[in-house]
Image (cartoon, rainbow, N blue to C red):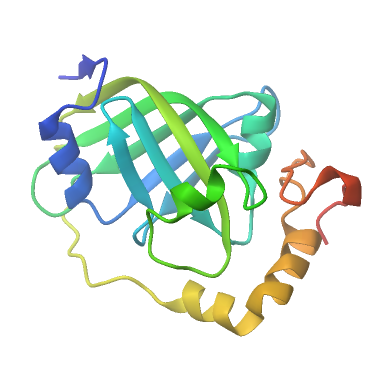
Length: 189
């Protein structure tokens, strides 16, 4: 049976910290709904109603484009290894890019990573737990290093070019604001 809470308590925090992966859901008023898996060391809880997570450069940039149009986000964790539970947090989030004032201080909460693209600063309005009894067992084998190697091979200049060519818009053509507006918006290649 689902239970709802108005904040993250200590038990919730322990469950979140024990998970190796979470999912981010976002949607604009129109276009596609996006659900994206996130891993690595990319999430911090900064209080009972605040979560920040760092987004590294990837093939799409849907969440930033969606939040620019409709500021809502859902994060979800599944208990794959031990405790059967599904946990979702619902709220809104500010998008911070490397050029923004608070980006550096929040980025410092995470291990150094080339290609840090955005930090999402989420205000949690509600947390909901449900049983997760149908979620299968999966064993954690470790993090992949493919994205880190890809970013290192590209370097800062290559990542900037990638953002310009591939991350300026969502798959529905919504601007993501990855680069300063004065450079003009382009569509994905």
